[in-house]
Length: 361
Image 1 (spheres, rainbow, N blue to C red):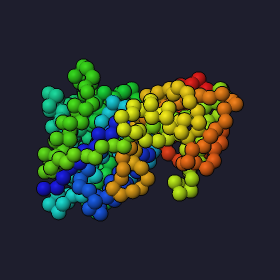
Image 2 (image 1 turned 135 degrees about the vertical axis):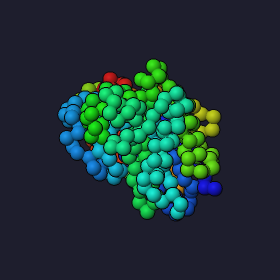
Image 3 (image 1 turned 30 degrees about the vertical axis):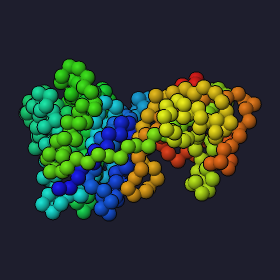
Image 4 (image 1 turned 180 degrees about the vertical axis):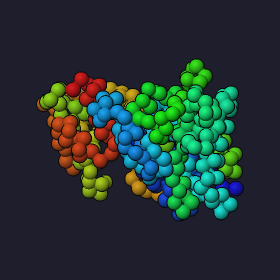
């Protein structure tokens, strides 16, 4: 029996999710891991499938920016859909065996996993032939409403993308689009149907169990995620605010970053952030917890190493002199737009933006 490893990743920036699918897909193709199910939440984002029509995004660019919603084009099937906090996104990275190499059967099986999960909450759901996804209500009913979107991609029977189940999702964000190009019906969530919020870990466990059952897979325990911190150091305020960037030594990648590092044994994230800040800059000061935690894959190693990072911010005086640690060979104080342009990873850029807001810069 093939194995299924389920990773519960929490928040994942959308572009990091694309990278996760890529590196896990390569690992699965090479036989370096079994089948994988990535369970996560994205920040607010609109994704356009291969069949997407741009006019199904009904909000202006200005409205999207004010709502903090990004847009991405993808290689999955389908039209425009929305991802955001409170929505459980599942990316099955499966190499379908010979007996299951049927696209329609695969889509039906993914739908069935969602349908069985909803049934555990007393919700009867199903499919509507002319519309993709999982629905509550009948095709011709005026109250037909979608609770889960399905959009998959298969390449030589290796699967990616998957489903998005509305659990505690902010449903007004669906007004920014015509969901999946369907204007005749609405959307709903577990929270709306039940009248109360539903614990996400509970839903994750149920859907993971159904994926193992439906696809005939044996659950395997995932390796623990590596815990790290990032710290944005800021001096000045308003237009004069400057962010400290550190350049890694060539043998460590040679790219610019903010302060980053791993937790040591027994450390709490705040302790690690303060320690890393001192070791990499020479500054001893309090750090501000940004309450920003996200997961990503480190580099393009196969199989990938998964990291959960906690974001922090700190402020220093204008006359503070940086003392570089061993990991870096240069530093610069730059304005925020320059920092965002230089930082290569979405999570670091998000950390900078949150830090400026948190510190009133």
